[in-house]
Length: 405
Ligand SMILES: Cc1ncc(COP(=O)(O)O)c(CN[C@@H]2CONC2=O)c1O
Image (tube, rainbow, N blue to C red; front, side):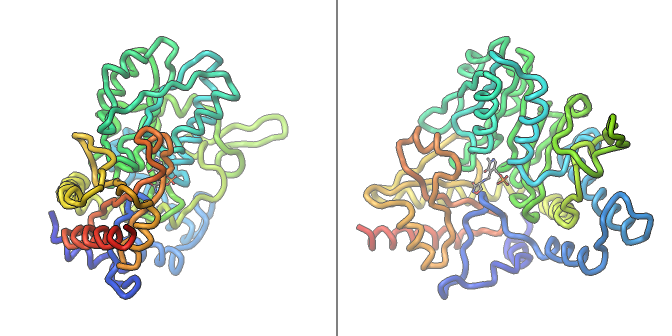
């Protein structure tokens, strides 16, 4: 692992204080902080390279297009996709999932067909399928989690039927930290002919993702959770599926020719990229990919795992504190509740100590229902966190509890 103190120095926001204390940022599952290289790339685009892409026949536009499409190639390589035609730029994981629901699913699913999700999904991988259930009459089946926050492959196999047409699963839970055995889950789903969408929002910044090795049909992630800017994300899709899918949004750039009688759509990936894209965001994402490649996704995940284990051990010494989510295979997320005090009150007091944690249902209300809690306090890790951050977290939790009890 690269020198953490040198890596921390690349993140300007970490130099500031919060309520007079050095900031301890422990909400990377919500959004990661941005390295100076990403910030500089966006500034450089707007100060030296700004032009619309794909259509200009002048140097500025050609350079902007080169940067934009260069970012797409970086993402292709990061995911080990076969072709840049399989890399669609969207706003984030939410839009990626909604795009599949609005196109592939609406094209392919009919009343009585089944979609399988897990109990640990983020709302962005629950509600789109509920909308289709209510509109198309499909069945939405839910693979339950156990007391540790894990799914069971045997239980999944027993829920798959010839009517299961889509399995949509998170790679890593934002609320629990559970890392799912997605490769095995994909193989099980393909065994009954179902396609598989993987929500990778919490995975790409923490582990190497190889979409060909996984053999997933779709894979989604958000740039802002991978040290990139907000408003840019990626949908990977197998080219054969994307070719057959109806367009998602209609307008400029997604067309080849338009008459009032008929429109011929553009080739991939542009068929799914209507209108002026988030050019600066994509360029920023490309530089974030450079950062991930320089530090190493698996190295980041391994370091965060060490911090997570240390944080769990330290927090568990606190009377009345219960860790929510104790999967054997777990990423850099520690969710917990404390008997007799509300998560929001604890997090609010922790903010006074300069500690930034999330107190919420984390857009995973079914997970909260499963564990019978209204919300949790969640500390989620990034490459810039260190063991001192964990010590300050634990001390601040202890102090907040004493004040509240
Ligand atoms: C597993 C998962 N899927 C999808 C999303 C949606 O991503 P976008 O908001 O980028 O479209 C999130 C967001 N995570 C939330 C956002 O804030 N805190 C969280 O844990 C997520 O954690």
